[in-house]
Length: 181
Image 1 (tube, one colour):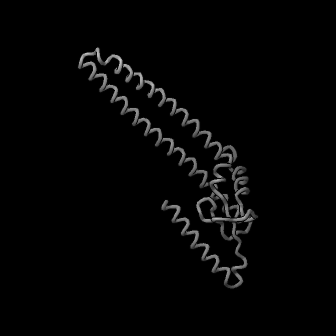
Image 2 (cartoon, rainbow, N blue to C red):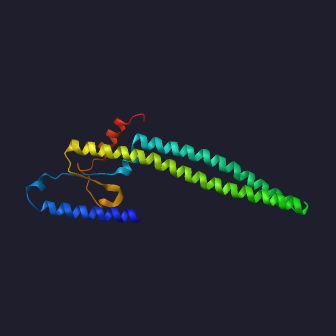
Image 3 (spheres, rainbow, N blue to C red):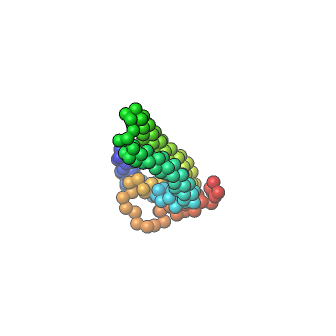
């Protein structure tokens, strides 16, 4: 939330600077502005799609492990519920203790898996976004743009479809440069 507010304030500040620059002398006439939607580029680039597929497969593997563990827990609980009344006190306490230990291990495993998935997602997306930023810079220089704003984080509330939107070119350039990565 703070990050979004920060970016919105920064974008507003930059927009004010740009507006004041347009109202001054002739150097402002050379200012060319573009924008790109990096989230769209992340989600539609070949590497972004591969990263999504990889993360989906990783999630499935981890869910399979968790489902197996959960089924074991369920069976242990059912056994305690069915046979608990005929076991002696020591056996019942040992089985209940074993169940609680397995339940706690399951919860820890669940949290660890969730953290692993988030970390992998951040690593994959972080690298792709870093690469996309360098592609944005390349495309901006090629097109002679003075400024490029990021569309998806609230810096631009509205922009009519135009040549100022370089998202498609960024995706195409990125796909060519990082093919097979």
